[in-house]
Length: 466
Image (cartoon, rainbow, N blue to C red):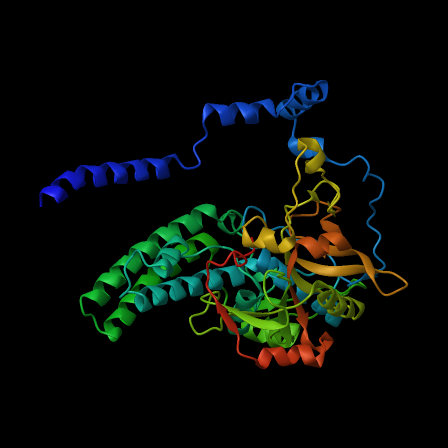
């Protein structure tokens, strides 16, 4: 016992020294700091760079002079479309993109001079259905602690105005579509931030109440009826913000020769079936994610807006294979749902996307060298915006050097509302493309029958497009 008595202070001192050493691991001492400071030389070139960068926009300074004059908007193969939409200050690009892929078919089918779908109509039902799904997840996870990662993800993301192709397809199939005249935009649909914030706050409050009820032994019937009462409040908030969705409406259009059609009466579902007549289930989503295996089917948990809907599924393919299918679709006058990391290497004024637009390497004298896979894995790059892919500049050898996108930022943005991207930009920053299965090789379509790899909703690739 005496030996133990004398050993205890030694063991304690050793433990303290070890903890201290661990705490000091990686510490920047003065010698190291001075070494780093001395690595930056006060040369005339560095002084000029300091003066430039501290007083000007980094993007302006990095814009490559050598690349100027090499850009043009010529595209030799285009989908016939008309009119540029504007999502305003909202994250509804996915809805605009989905509807803009259907619009050319309506224009051609009826020889219409101009036409626009109501994004507000489908947005209303998207928000309502997302609210229901969130409350269902709250009930399903009520037995898990609030510290559980899935519960934390749910509470952090109760609802949002973003989405992707699957949310678009499911809401259109269930609720149909209407022309813009049947349910025009409102201030809140154009400026969604405050409405979304209040919906999220109410849904979090409702989720906590449902959790308490479930953990206190409430039966499923009681939880279901309580959820319905909660959804009545959500419906009220949406009606006050967006207007009440029409159950029936009249529609008349003008043809290109100036003549007016007769007046038709439709329900939203009938309008989708008879006027649009497109089966969105015929479309397949592809991803180009080099951080994962190609020619595999993947599924994203909870990435949907309907409780009864299917999770988002996609086939991961090499970029060149996706391009081949895309060209076929454009050549047949069919637009595609396209999503990308639009903020990277974008000249929004000129309407150009080019990997050589901005040279940050030379401006700062450092190398930004991550490839696409590493940018995905580190959250440096991911899909942030959806647009309709409507054109390709096809060369004599069948390859492409440029592509054309119909954007939803208004006609005063970009090249009269359009963006042109180089083929290299497509390679680096395109992530999702939805293509009709008739343009897809049979061996690729077979992948849809395989078992999908389930991915968590917080995966770096799956923030919704805005």
